[in-house]
Length: 564
Image (cartoon, rainbow, N blue to C red; front, side, top):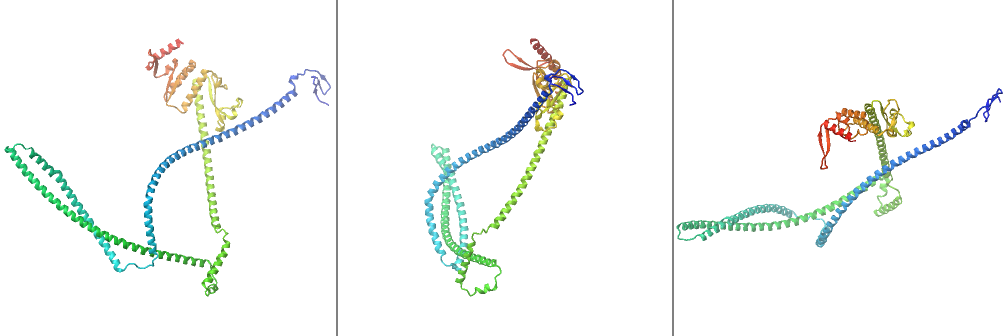
């Protein structure tokens, strides 16, 4: 066949005819390798397909979780609304209960007033019957000119009597006030003075005493003067009472006359009202007839232009025949009653509603578009803020880690969803180009003895190295977003001496912008510290804090180191 071949036993047959032997290693068979490659490729494709299906299912589950979370939020809002509504309904129920009690009391009062109202209703019905009978009488002018003049003169006289009555009431009130003042003066001052004098007269002892006699005489004169004053005041009071009685009698006469005039005026007013109501009734009837006339004229105009024979044709017709023909025409028109006379109006209303709904839909579409644009802008700003903050913290972390470990290197790397496998991880600059939604976390890679090595993950470090990396992360965040003070509790416990010195120097350099409070049992922190406090434990088993010097602090730390 003109080809070079190798048999299964390892013999080589050349196309020139020579045959040489050899060794065949079955473990390195190309056929087996091709079979293995085929099987692994099929397995890889199956696994790849399974991986895609799993990712798809994960995405669907995340979407379902998001949807359920939204539903939970909506349900929580509805629950709060229901709770608020229940509270409002409870308050309304209590208020309605109170109103019910009030209404019950009101019903009881109204039931008590029903009898009175029924009696009053009976009298009103009688009055209404009288009014109706009066309305049935023909319209006529009920008042003569003399009666109208008499009503006018009586009205003027009523006004004059009312003014006189007001003046008399004022005079009477003034006189009653004076009378009350005089009576008060009489009762409160003069009579009391007379009683005091009478009691002093009774108290006087021996009438033979000249001084007592003089005093008695003076008191007697004073008593007579007081009695005279009382008598005059009493007479004045009686005169005023008489005058008041006269004024009261005159006022009563005026009131009686006023009542008579008012009754006459009320009677005249009722007569005038009856005449006015009758006039209004006839005016309303006239207005109704005029409106019917206008309606008939409008119907005639709606018929359009009629031929001349229409006017001449029905002139000689009798009214009865015309009414019958009109009735027949109206009956014929009733056959078309099923036609929807409001169809055109309904069409216009529906068209207007459709236009309003279309305009509202356009407004809602515009609002939805603007909201989506706003969400995109906010998402973009959020992504930019996250990436900018991470870049700043990552840069600060590299700087701080280089200061703490001069021979090493540290990096912060954002992990993405596609970077779950360690073989597919990229550096920080490449990962920051992807969307924030693809980020799953932040990983740390550090190297303590080389600046070119790939570095170790945080899980591969020792306890002291993890503490140092954690401190570097805290200092990097502090440079990005500083806090007013920091409280560290034995952060140098697991660090080596060189790292403790580096951390102490770092804290000293950062103390210009923030306050650092640390607890330690190592001397490196004491070298750079500004203030020292010792926690002592006395014999009463009570701890106390006091300010100490650097030497005392160093001595205490050395004692603790020797004790360990």
